[in-house]
Length: 197
Image (tube, rainbow, N blue to C red):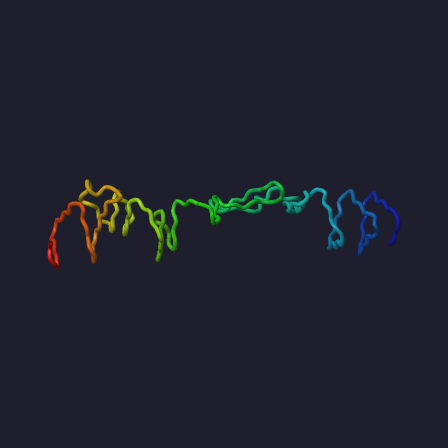
């Protein structure tokens, strides 16, 4: 069937086979249009129900609709990535704190090469050009009010009680000179290999 001009159908209209609608005019359907086979469109499809510049989704009935909140589709991870809907069809991804090269992020614990047991845990070789410490604890994890090498505890708590006091639990070798400006107390043997002047 070939028809030129305006055609109006008030009831159901069934067609079988290929249908071609051409021309500069438009074909309007006030009801539903059911297509059981494929639909090829060479022009644009405009859906007035959709919002401009938004992603499209289908609901449970397979009806097209605009995505109103992208956070329903993009999920963040607690304490890692935060997803914020901008209200204009876009989202902003952010971290809990700044991590750029000039930032000063804070962590309760940090492990490098291993899981942290203390505030900072480093597995392997590390180096530093300058160190600033309070009480220094070496070879042990429990803290003390004084600095120490080893895990032993002082028997002179009235003398060793601040960060500038030092306890060495193991052996100590000094190959150079040693200077004592205060008193020295020895509770066991005292050996010398050279002259005692």
